[in-house]
Image (cartoon, rainbow, N blue to C red; front, side, top):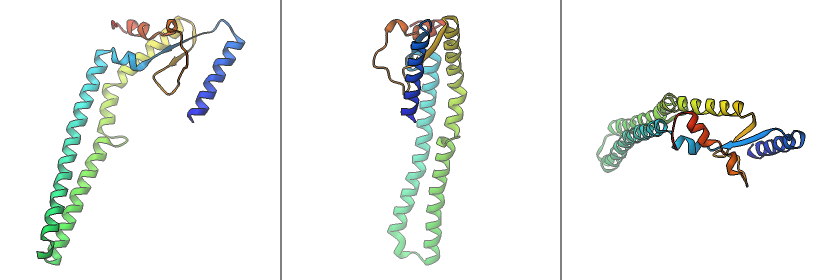
Length: 173
């Protein structure tokens, strides 16, 4: 998929240059820009803290599972069949609780994803809109993002519009 995308981008770029010398190209580095936006850094720090707290909560439950299992192994020979079955079920239930909590917090549509959408997406949308305005105002045909999977072997630094986007957003670099 990456190869196909890269081939497509190179083809578009090459055809564009061959067909029209008046088209302008530029690039931005979204990682660089986001690192220079304080609200993004604050949001990222908040997400990191939440993530660490939730991970500790999950690890505490797994520690309980581990203790239950070790206690069970040590006492297994002394327990009746009914007591062994109950302890095994308790261990399985506790482990299931940990996995469900992990999925709730870190799953595909989990709490961390929702919190990221709440905190980070508006900032990313703001950056995207500023890039779009600069592309329109500057009559750029394409603006590449060098922070993603698209790599460039050579870029002319005067085409980097990252600082312009930050300035348009009202941030100093």
